[in-house]
Image (cartoon, rainbow, N blue to C red; front, side, top):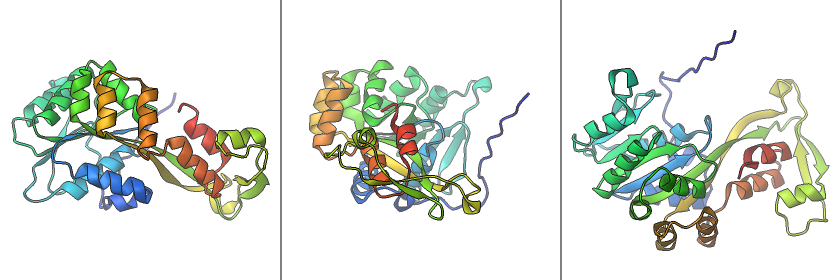
Length: 287
């Protein structure tokens, strides 16, 4: 037998601000400009436990004002937020994400947060809500930002609707931080240089590996930091999406616009001695 318990911090724990999310200056400015859009869809993506809800709550904390009607649909409601109407999903009672979303759209919301776009019906309603003048924030389980856009189309949302409604996508991961007391330097191999996408593959650089000490409970790591990949849907990207372009086309255009991919961000942390090569492989093996 085994039991799994998920403990939600519902006490007096302050909401993180978007300045506390660990974003680079470029990503912070981009994210801040995205959440200030009056209508459209912003999606946060990543695996379970990657901090998606924390990012959404930080955005809601920034947006919640006395004259702004903010309503969320969640499963579960992880933390009560002052000034926001939060709805708990209850599938047994017929209160699914889609049903709850239909109901709250009749309550004149300015901003809607959907805990997760789990099915095509919820995705379609969310996209239509954005087109009709609401700011919609939600999450999806995909590997990276470009895959999220393709996934929406795969869920049955028309490409032109995605193109006209999507503001942007934030893909994120949580990366373990090496313990500063016991991390050990060594020289990188050629294969590791290739993984880090260095220009000079044959010249070793100093990287650090985890060891373990009493300070970190012999794990080699102390704490975590976030890495982010943000695709802002500019006119060029929207054109690619509208004609049902591929993930590779979207990613290429995003990089031209200044997007730093997840693998680039974690590679930079390895080179700075913040995290290990093991984390680079773990975090980016699927991207």
